[in-house]
Length: 343
Image (cartoon, rainbow, N blue to C red; front, side, top):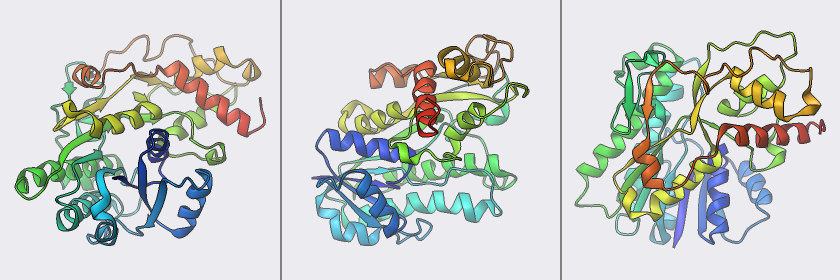
């Protein structure tokens, strides 16, 4: 039996595929073009357990029909990772809300039509954005956990890119949970959602290190390319989790019976620019004097007075320690400097 993963060329998805192949699963992935398929197959050394199908536009509600009509009888697990992740766009509804929602609608209805008796588990990559009110992130009286939901309405999600992205994750995940309840007598599968925060970590392949990285990792990349005289902007603060832990959670999401019907809030720790720069300045002597110093050891890792996130239930269910910020940044920076021939 096979695992199907949508959005196979994504940052998180590549790490998931790598872990699946290491465990000898047969993997069928979707990509947006044949060129992307060819590149990914080459990167995985034409692994016999990996095959790819082209799904050009997940906004099309029938986008996954061909895949599941062709492979439905061999797919046991479905990992839906494909969804837009950006906030700068011209049309919030067209570019963010509709693709996220229709991608989830489409894949679940394709399972219902072609693989209702075969697919046993579905894991959807949602986001912390579906769980909390980001306008209250700096409010120390605000608490959220695995049971929380972003309060934005659809209309509020159309106001700006941040609300649009957060809304896209909320509405897509809400649809999935409602779908399972509505069709519980017609489908075999059980649902788990993985809700990560900012996902940092090395690219799976060095050649994917480019001048501009994917949305989360670009935050680190920008800091690495600051100059010593630049100001340290600590207004931006957030939660992080390592990409390798996110991938591991997806596998456990279909392997572990205790994760059925669970939302997994993936947070390793808080961070801000000061925390990242502290690690870079302390661990990389080749960068000495090149980066801003700021005020060392005063970042969000050391003092945080904002919203309180509690993901203790998730940690207990997953049963492994999350990779700390120091290792994640060390691994990322090492890879970037190696690619830039600065090591």
